[in-house]
Length: 209
Image (cartoon, rainbow, N blue to C red; front, side):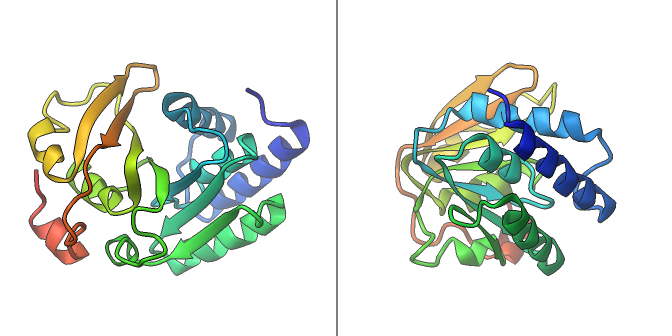
């Protein structure tokens, strides 16, 4: 699937600005976009589904996903006011404000808000936090039966995502997409306890794995 030319040019402009601000890495923008598109190929979101980009930063993969799939609704979450201000302006520039929003806040708090809790068909995640923190935060956002799609390093440790501990968070199935690039898909097969996710300070000091 290829992004329409007009959208691609707008997207490149936005992401170049994100790079200037230090909100995304130093890779070539075309490579950044191509890698972001692989999130869609790995997760294969259903039509008209509702997804979240956890720790969106400069909009990767969220802005790319939104440009590629006009049927999806997306929420881009980041705790930095500067990054979210940038994302809000980017959303307006790309003309996608009717189906994409950017929220600023601590996801361990946002995931307990009634409008967001277990409201997403899936969560995309790239370079957000450690596996333990990522899984615990996402578990509070994903609907029963929904997916966490995580971009993985080329050669991850075999014990990086321990199944037994993930089951405590409600993740009952996992699938590795070998790629390259490599992704991990986790399916929420059981609703976790009401305390999930714990406060940010607690999950960073005492991660589950």
